[in-house]
Image (cartoon, rainbow, N blue to C red; front, side):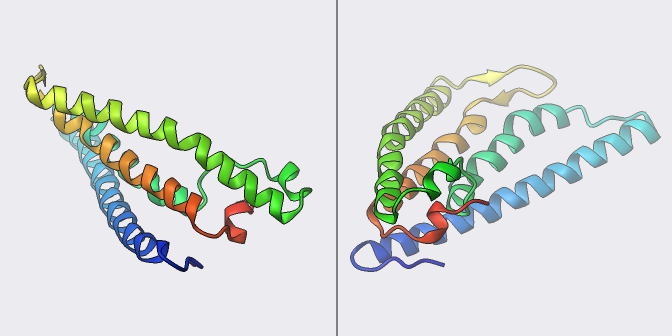
Length: 173
């Protein structure tokens, strides 16, 4: 539950809506991936007719989208590394300060990852890069999900740095 107030509250609310939408899309993509892999396995073993496109589609497109789009929601839900044993021994003010410092340190790293993946995506689309095979797969559509997920994750970490620290930020999962 969000305890965000002040000027950051509307931004946090809008960001939560975007994160939830991306998580739903990621879940649908991963569910579709499971159906596709299962269909391929059944078709391969029962009918000796594998889905020749399945591996590349799953590996280079669906899994990338499923993971990258779920990153910001996963972070918000507590899916991050915390050293809680040491943190729990410190006063609350120090815990809050360390939480913010950790976010401030992570922000440039996330921003650079987002920028570099956006450059790679742009280059792949601009150069009309393809992976050759049974189907010629456009590389840009494999990469596009990474900068989208990282951009929203970067915004989430930035918003979390500005908003009040809550117990869930510092707890173990």
